[in-house]
Picture 1: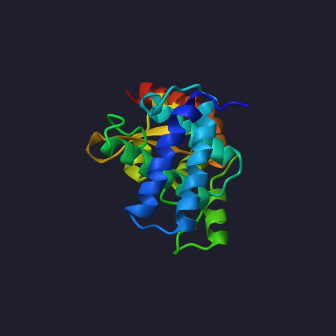
Picture 2: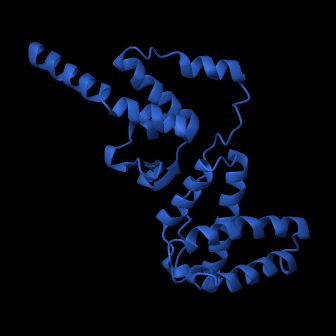
Length: 219
């Protein structure tokens, strides 16, 4: 069975990068093997997209890969490690002028990668996420906000600045505008996406409609 086009064009570059890690950067054999496993996962994923080479890889391809890992049940810490390997590989390709720019440059690992904040216990986080009243529209809105803050590691200013056209439900990620108007792509987990979809499925429209009614009565 022959490898697909992505495998054929990427394999020599991955091998060269791994050699660079071992020889020029002096990483241990164990560490290099870990990079190798993570990058082979990427190659297998890209192979199904029939991409001809690294210059054809776009940010959405990398986001799709990370979302696929999450859906496959890979732990947050492991996904963070994979993303680090992917970023390192594409940054090296850019430095070697194999590609013009890295498609993984703006991808950020959520600040909460499976670890609870040190100031909160597991029970406290559960109580926080369960505090909003799911029987009300505003409670379902607040639940979606808390899930996004926790799962995606958003700043409050980033949360309130989210736009509907920045939500990619099919791929499971958000486009977030941070400081200086810089845009980045943030994958979100299943629980956060479910809460967001629930809020957008009705409560948001009813809350907005209620606000308009009050404005007309008092205007």
